[in-house]
Length: 85
Image 1 (cartoon, rainbow, N blue to C red):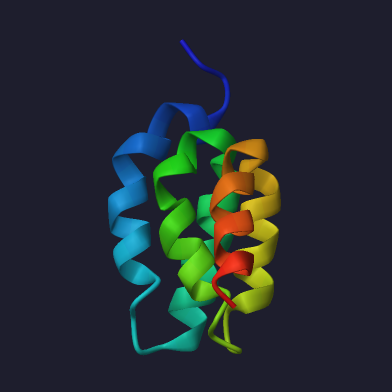
Image 2 (cartoon, rainbow, N blue to C red):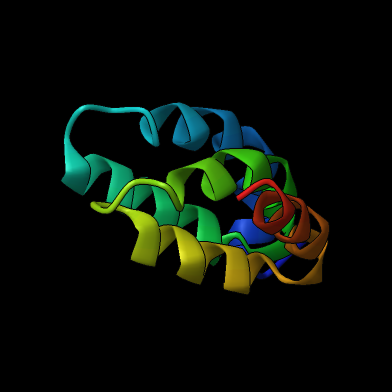
């Protein structure tokens, strides 16, 4: 049994939190990004949505922190996003 809530619930919660990144309310989007970051690498499936969220001035700081917390699995998507700028 995992002692880290992120590891235990991350894969189940990730799709709902990714959906919340599209919410009209900026506070909801920031909260979703923050929650995804707390799951760490267990939130790897959220990386594309978080990279997309970097384009939104209301949530980009939270998305950047989440990507940092998710870790090295986010690097390829970030490199690709930079190439496409």
